[in-house]
Image (cartoon, rainbow, N blue to C red; front, side, top):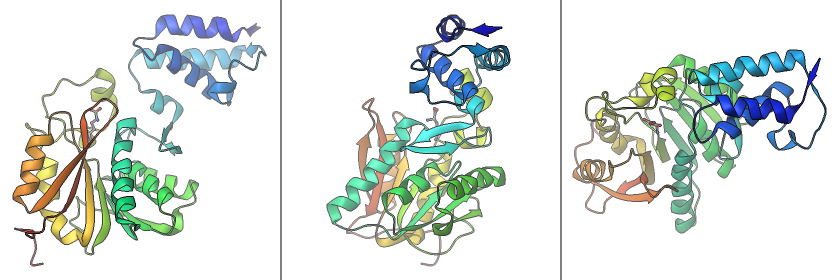
Length: 288
Ligand code: GLN
């Protein structure tokens, strides 16, 4: 028995919630058929019963809230095809703002970073995107989660960046000495009691999302480490949650950084760029 793809997709869209129902159904059907989403409708061939059963099983899991990236095991970030598991945060398009901010910074300076550090690397998305921008750079990715490091190093190998990158288990920068031209981080910044969509709260790693009652715990750990991790003319680019511009900017300024912000496509200040302010940096966390 065979099935018509248009009818299958229409039926699935009826079942799926939210504004991305059509997109989700197409991505999942393309995954089952092993083709690109854009080729899905160009190809008119019928679909056999086994593929239909697999597709319907994925639709059922999606209805329960499982992220599409977990169902396919892949997510695109900065045009890189990344493997994703429940051990890592699913890369978000708005996190590309950090790469845009770093590119704008180094382009304006007329130089490229030689060394890149990614604090809490997760899938490796930010670090690997940066390595794809600057082909002569090398990088270090840190994460407290060894399971995440496995995902990140697998992605580095698959993308051909294996020789330019090292991954290390570390609670933020604790295990590391050295200075980097570019420090990236998408830390957890969600207040513990915040109301998150079910698919995020149930399926993505709490360690990558939550940062204490005010959502600032990770910044309070990371900011004091930056003076010893950042090269003198380097820049740190951190992700922010909506509405955190003022408070994170104030924390960073109090530590002697000059903060600048870049908005994402929704107009939310999503990236903060930190450079050493001319007055110098105060209170580093080590004899430095
Ligand atoms: N942006 C994520 C969300 O969807 C949070 C990621 C983070 O805390 N870094 O809530």
